[in-house]
Amino acid sequence: MKNYSIAKSRRIRSSPYTSRIERQGVTAYTVYNHMLLPAAFGSIEDSCDHLKKDVQVWDVAAERQVEISGVDAAKLVQLMTCRDLSKSKIGRCYYCPNFQVKIFEPNVDIIAIQGPKSFSLMEKVFGKKITELKFFGFDYYEFKGVKHLIARSGWSKQGGFEIYVENTQSGLDLYDHFFEIGKEFNLKPGCPNLIERIESGLLSYGNDFDNNDNPFECGFEKYVNLDSEVQFLGKQKLKEIKAAGIKRKLMGIYIETDKISLTKSLKIKDDKGNFIGELRSACYSPHFKKVIGIAMINEPYCKPLATGVIEIDGNSLSVKVCDLPFI
Image: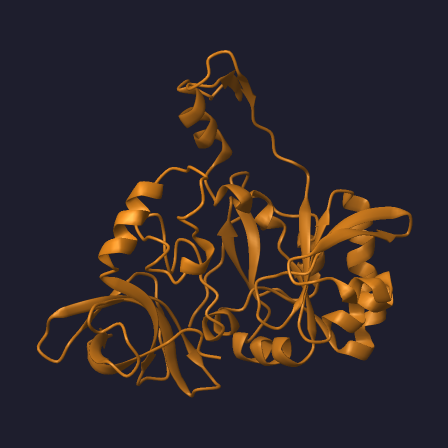
């Protein structure tokens, strides 16, 4: 798949680590939350293989707004205050006129340490205690007199940590330190890997699902508690959906081809030409030696071994449905 350059401008922010990753050979960017997010360091196949075996340091500072699901902060305030925010980001809450709202962005630039050897690397820097963190656990750890909040998390299935850097200079020093001591772990710069994340069934908001899909369709039912007394927007609707049962579901699919370039959803049909679902993300997987993807599949086809057909570049290719994750 050919990559195209991104023209930098004031509309797209770089991160404190951008100059470092460019010296280290970043070959592609995407844009996330109006910031540069590294998308490749050479071959994504080789990077995927390395991520599964060793350890990588990722510049994921673009995740700084992920807690509001990628919605622009200014738009969020507009919804809350019903006023023009072109001149001010302070307003009165639409629902509670006596309550003032102020939106600001914290200065947090995240570094992710991902891969099976991440635990050894982090222990070498922060000590044995950090390896005892539970999954999604977090605590403060010190580096040269500066404390950093570190969580055992990250957007890969290979294990790792995310460091929430508030002290920019300390974060840069820490980034450099990782590469100074990381040779024994075969440390390399990296980034969220398309192949690894699809194989692992890690869903991407805006690609695999969005606010037109409900959590039951996306396999999130274990995170939805409709029996508690807690009230939230959409609770009644979710009860109705659960009672009626879903009509479609996110599934994995295998496609009998060895290449794909996906920039939009593609229709999947049955052998009679009837629409049965849409492909939302896909990549070539060296592990399976074919294209794999994440697709929203309608009933009664959203079950393993169901089959269909998809047209790519004028070719009709066979599709086989499977459960997520692939690996």
